[in-house]
Image (cartoon, rainbow, N blue to C red; front, side, top):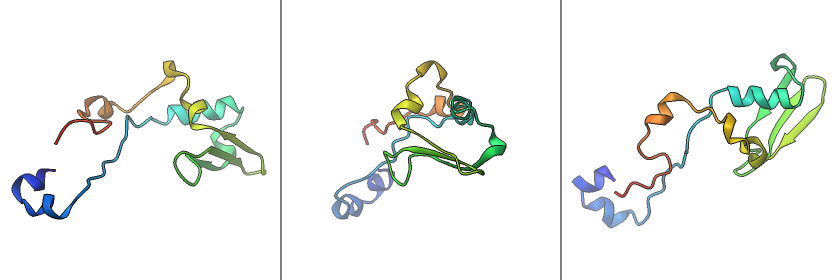
Length: 101
């Protein structure tokens, strides 16, 4: 967007611009809450995968002894009282990329 203001070729050759939609990055407290939900400690983990192998996808937890757990993105974030995002996210002027170019 900024380059297009300086160079008209950008708008001539670039028909679409994609933006990363964030909405806030959780601190590790949310991950710790998920472990507590399943009665696990961090030491037991072999894998903690967010959003599966694509977005949206299941969050998957695997333990060193072969137990596995899955939770949907919606289940993970349904309790809004426990949303803890990083302080820098509170300063972001355009977390969902809606500010016009």
